[in-house]
Each structure stands twice: as structure tokens, then as C-alpha cells.
Image 1 (cartoon, rainbow, N blue to C red):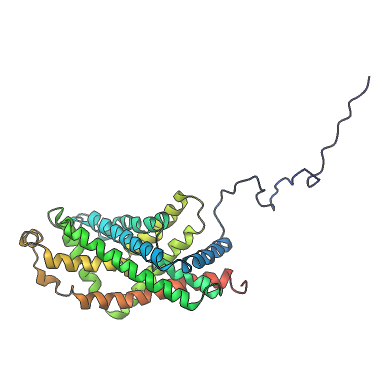
Image 2 (tube, rainbow, N blue to C red):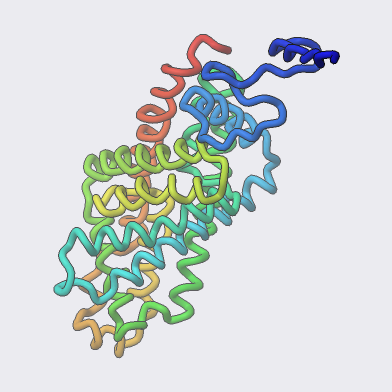
Length: 310
């Protein structure tokens, strides 16, 4: 009786036989990598995104910036609404946390929906430091996007006030909107600047974290904690303030007497809500946002992961 001969398996790596993935092997061509990107890969992605953003044409860049301004404004309006009527019922910190969770809607819409946000685009500094885009390209992007964000945010404020949404909840929504705007124009330049630094450090960290994501769910989960944190702690976001302060100015200008009676206030209580107050807030907050985004986040991660590679 002939004993069948059993052929020994071909060694891994032989012709036609793929390597078995081991602890030091990456995924094979037929495998799908499901884990998040690591920070070094995130840095590469951030630089590549910066190159693509800088290359956008003027019209699409501006339109996407208008969308981003509107998205952030919608998050701000949502945060204002959920905080309405809570004073005296919930602790201050809880109110701020709830408002922050609601405000996260804005950046979720920007990142998942696709839009151009000035504060997030401060991370173009990583592509610039890698010499992949010019200083002129960065300035062009920031100028166009900032203008578009302003149009989108102010336009949304006009629509929300025209809809009379501030009068909802027996005027409590408008009362929160007015107090929020008044607090923002009440900061001195130095305090507004530092609050802007802290804010965009967290915003750009949220954007940075999304570069590790592989799914929409990943992106949303990465965005919410840093955004909720900056709102809860009262930091200052220039694009959000393009909604908050104009909304307060418009309410002060057009709200009927019945609204002021309902909230037991008069327009003179908010005399600081004017153009000088708006500009006096936006200038230092914007400068602070640039420092927080470009230096505290962009420059640090470039220094660690990209310096010397380009």
C-alpha cells in the first residue's frame, strides 16, 4: 500500500504565498485598517488638507466659508436656546456644559458637512511651515474665509432675529442672547485676547483629533469634548461672536416693548451693544484665536512630527 505523500506548506513569502500578518506587519493589501490614525499620520493628513484648502478657488472658498459661518451661528443659536430659563434652576457649570454640548453642532456641521472655518484653518500653519504653501496662500485663505464666515454668521443672526425666535420662552431666549452679547463686549482687550488663545487651542485640537478619524461617528465623537469644554469655560471664538454680538445688537434695535416688559429690562441696559463693541471684541479675539491655533497646536505638532521632513 502506497503511503500518500503530504507536501510541506510553502514558507511565507514564497511565490504566490503572502506573508502572514505578524505583530510588526501592517495590514495587507486585502485587509481594511479600522483603527484610528496615529499622531504622525495625523500630521501628514493635516499638512495635506492645508495644501488642498489653500488651492481652492475664490468662489468655492468664499461660499464654503459662508456656510461655516452659518453653521457656527446655528450652533450658537442652539446653545442660546437650551440655556434659556435655566438660570436660578441649574448650577452655572451645568448650564455652561449643556450650552457647550449644543454648540458642538456648529463644528460638527463644518467638519462633516464640509465648510471653511477661519479658526480651524489656522492649522494651515502646518502646511506653511513644511514649505508646501506660501505665506501669500495662507493670507489669501484666511482673508477670504474670515469674510465669508462674517457674512454667514451675521446673515444667520438677521434671519433668527427676523423670525422672532428671541421672544420664545416668554422672552427667555432673547434674555440669554442679550446677556451673552453684553458679557462679550465687556471684556478688556487683553482678557479677550487670552480667552481667544485658549478657545482656538481647543477648537484646533478638535479639528486635529478628526484627522485620526476613519468614520463620521469618529469625527463627531472627537469634536464634542473640546468644543463643549471651551464653551463651558467661557473662552472666546471669533466666528461665534460674529453671531452672538450682532444678534444682541439686532434684538436691542428691533424688539418690541412687550419683549422688554417680559424680561424686565430696557434697551438702555445694553447700550454697549454697538459697532464699537463688536469691533472691540472681534479684533483681540481674532488675534488670540490665531495665536492659539497656529502656535499652541499647529506649530507644536509640526515641530514634533513634520520638522525636517520637507
